[in-house]
Every structure is written in structure tokens, then in C-alpha cells.
Image (cartoon, rainbow, N blue to C red; front, side, top):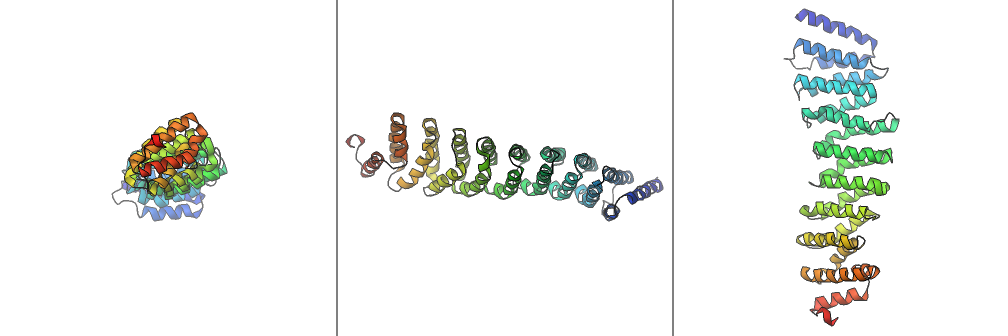
Length: 352
């Protein structure tokens, strides 16, 4: 039986003559590194799988060479049955695009060190979902595989799936922008703690309301969120999402300005300020950023309880006069100044 298997391997190696030299070269180097306890029939299946990949199209030999090259590393992370499932995924991708399959195989050693075996097919499917048969979609899908190991260090697999859904939606607007956000993702996600789902959700909302702002949102998010009390970042993002849904514009800049304002007050006050902001959304979304920025200006003069009284006066004014209420929270009206002066000096409202 052993002689028969050796003969079969030799027969397979004869087929390598049909392909460029790197296929045979990578096979020979990989064969020497495959597990010592690998059964002979498994070795034959592995060798045959590479040939099957190589003979698909004119350029698929590149994918086959890469397949052989990384096989010793990949098989060290999983049982042989999962290894063959990984192989089949690459084979299927090669039918779509040899370039895509090559990127998949090339990224696999690092990816498999972090990916659970049960997610192999799903990971391959994510990359394939970004490929639409065009050059730009191929570039995006290949970059996804290349960046996957770095992304997996910060994202759970469900979060990675949501991120790819966002990229897919954005790619319908601009493949270049989707590729930029993919690259930014590996830099930004490590900075934003456990609030990645909310961040991705807000980015997805921006695709519909202002897709040209998405890149700025990623850049702003990386700067804004570290300034917010860690326990309040999710709420901050949800408020930003509500502003988007309410027709707000230039959300990246709003995030930068409001996060800077919050960084200038006691972090213990963040929760209460955001609670008031959530209530203010129901009255006037446009007033919310102005209220938060106003807090940074007045909290060195007022206690938190006094800020709440100033806030209540602003809400009452909003209901009577929206423009006047907005000016109140911007601290651009004489009434706002007089209320602040009264509160800081302990004068009762009815004497204003």
C-alpha cells in the first residue's frame, strides 16, 4: 500500500509539468514540512487538491502554489477534515477568481491562528460576498482577506460579519471609500473598546444618509471615543446615530466637538449629561450638540443640579420658540446668560 501511495504521489508530481515551476517547487518544500503522522492517503488527497486548483484556469497555478506553500502552517491549527474544508473553500474561490483564492490562501496562516475551525467557510464566504466580478471588487475582497488577521484581533466573528455588511453597502457607493474604511478599521477598532457593534451600526446608517462622510466618521471616531467615559461610549454613539436619523449633517465634526466638550468636564458627569441629551433628542436634535458643548462652558460655574435647571429652562424655551431655544443652548442669548448668572449667584428664577 505504501508503495502504491508513493507511486500515486509520483504520478501527481508528473502532472506538475503542465504548470509553471513554482507549483512543483512549493509542493516539494511543503511536502517535507507536512506532519510526520499524516496518513499516506491524506497526503495524496492534499497533493491532488493542489492539482485540481492549478488546472482550473490559466492563472490558477498561482493559487495552487500558494496553497501548497501555506499548507504546513494551516494544518497545524486543525484536524485533517477541517483542513480539507479549508482547501475546498479555496478551490471554490478559485472558480470565482484565482486572485481571490491566492489572497485567501496567503492570509490563512495568520487568520487560522485566530479563527475557530467552524468559521472557516463563513470567513471565505465573507470575502466572496465582496467580490462582484469586477476589478475593483476583486481588489476590495483581496484586501479583506489580507486585513482579516489584524481585524480578528479586535473583532468577534459576528462583529466581523457586520463590518463586511457595512463594507458591502458602502462599496455600492464607492469601492475606493470602502477600501479606505477597511484599512482604517484595523487601526480604529482596537481603540474603541466594546462598542464596536454600535460604531459599525452608525457607520452603516451614514452610508444611507451621507456616505461621503463615512471616512471622516472613522477618523473622528478614533479621536472622539477615547475622550468619553468608557461606560458611556455606547450611549454617545447611539445619540450620534439618532442625530443621523434626524437629518443631522457633518456628524464626524459633531462627534469631535462634543467629545472634546465632554473631556473638559468630570467623567462622572458624562452619564447625566448624556441622559439629558437623550431626552433633548425628543425635543430638538439640533439642540443636542449645542447643549453638550454648552456644558463644557458652564460647569466650572454651576453644579450639576444647577446645570439641570438651566437645561429645563432651555427646553421650556424650545417648546415656545425653537430658534430662541437653540440660541439659549448655544449661550448666544441674553436670556441664557441671565439664567446662568442667576444660578451661579443663587438668585431664584422668578427674580430673573
